[in-house]
Image (cartoon, rainbow, N blue to C red):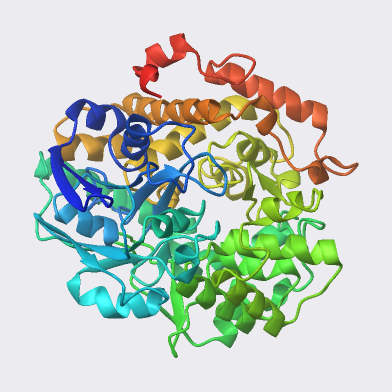
Length: 567
């Protein structure tokens, strides 16, 4: 759309500039564009809660079009939880609305003197007082503001700057991980409200229509999409992961959970009167469900976090825990995992009331668990935090998915599975099934998947698009929308460019090869072979074209066209 909006909260000024066309071509949009802007604006050594650390929201050329799965947008900053660069992808309709307002990138820097929210409608951008919204959670805040457009906001957890805080939009969707809600709170930014009336321009409507039709046919023919996620949502993964012994339980002490029969998709379907919710913008799956009395059915990650992770099989409690996290704007995965580590440390079991009370205390900033398991355990000289780079691992056990284990260790974000999504080939067989219990051949394949996901995030597509659509289809849609010809190789190279820039930022933040590791628990007698793991990390650096210290050097950066001097 050609427009970047920069809001300086310290001076209460709004500036409109033309988005750099070269950066758009090289980084596309979404995650890639957000990462490039962050590297241009701040030092890798910046304190994440300092006003100099910007909060950047970016869309892509495909957002707001009929492209399937384009309901995402990226929120990028330096994470206060991990101290790494961090791009969080959030669904719903907020990104589409931002695109329809004509905005490629929204850059928020500085700190307001008192609470504010940002109101955007096309070319109208205004800062408004949010003092009447402070101390309110996300549901109440959205109720008050939703007449003005799509709302992204923080709850009390963000206001309290707890490091598990995220940003919630459209009531249901969030930036999930990395503590980006704490950054909004540190800036006294309560919410962003956006309404757009512009139709995105498409260069070749005929070719675009053909590609979209073909993509729809591929999605309909894919049983995982059309008969799995579409019918059951992501809870369809629960019983499968447990059957394959990769569903971690009790703070990763076990790789399966005995109470799975009360948490499976079949149990939910048979015992709860559910109805499908509308999907994110452009989504053909619509993977979210709610009960007839309007209680959201949690997704796989949240069911795991407040179920097997903490040893709980009461689904009603998991629903309530999910609601609390959304209302307070808390990352459910890090929250559940942190509670699980606390339970192991104290040798406690947890009841429903206690679990919900702990979550509420975290949201209110009254708990010693507010800043995640790594902070909590480090203060006690203990290694029970199941995290990488201080980001808690999600509900996929790396001992049984070794490509994903390598993905966790080398992630630029920390213990995240979404930025490599090796679950697809190693567990779900997409695009083909791999032997999940070996590192053999995974180092080279992993960097391909990481590049692909970075490109998908830059296109503002949902990760689930990769189940049926490949980079050829994605490149064709991007080309027909923009009028700039992209080959599949161009698309992957853009993802590689983003990944290397993120890695360089982290290196200059102080991260080294010693941070590309897993918790020691996973290297016990029945776990991962440590020598094989170390060799896989070394092989990964080789495939990346980095040196033995895991650093992208000038020849790799020049090859990718990265102006590394600005980082």
